[in-house]
Length: 299
Image 1 (cartoon, helix red, strand yellow):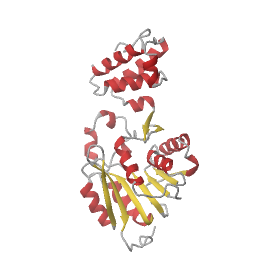
Image 2: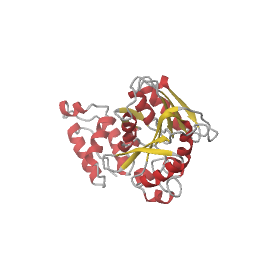
Image 3: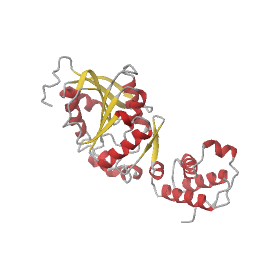
Image 4: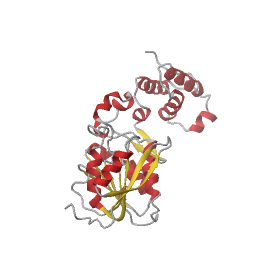
């Protein structure tokens, strides 16, 4: 495969060549991806393409951009090539053990902020299956007096999450623990959030290569019906929530009814279901049933 761009091309021309190269290999987001890869691999600002779009690429710049474009043409997501992605307006480093933060997941952050908690309250947060730490870090950035605990089974993910918390200035208010959901924890927590694996095992092989090949399977596979993690999380959360506390979980677009049944079985009330930008149910907010004894399950 020939090099997609060459030294001597202007930045503007290199962007056009890169977009055409990706489009020719079936990349639906070719124009966006070409721009992102050009800006990031050459360490530019968007304004540089306007003010200095005629500046020619040096050989080393062309080589870096070409290498990134070839990886994208093979189906590797832009976020994986760059090793970082933005979520809630904040930068997040990625690792092989973490998902790429997706815009749909911001619905969970929106649901938490919509609870109406005082911004300066000493809120106690728990993030189950924290991954890159995007949910916990985003909420800590919005609630300056909150503290949070992130749990994940993968040590590599926890290292990544800790680095992201430090990079975004909230590391002093976050702790990270390796564990299997919340089985060894005691509450109470004011807000518990989770974006657990929710894809049925049989569906994973049919996912797009960008997800199936490059995302960690442990963060995707929700068991035979996609609901295994929810069964555990809802049961644990019911006894970890503080009075008036809320559990907020991300769900798949077709899982609202199943989640409502699981919530009822765990003696949780569904308070609200928030929809993502596509109109799909995405974040389910739950509360403990009135009168429930938080120690009744022996956690």
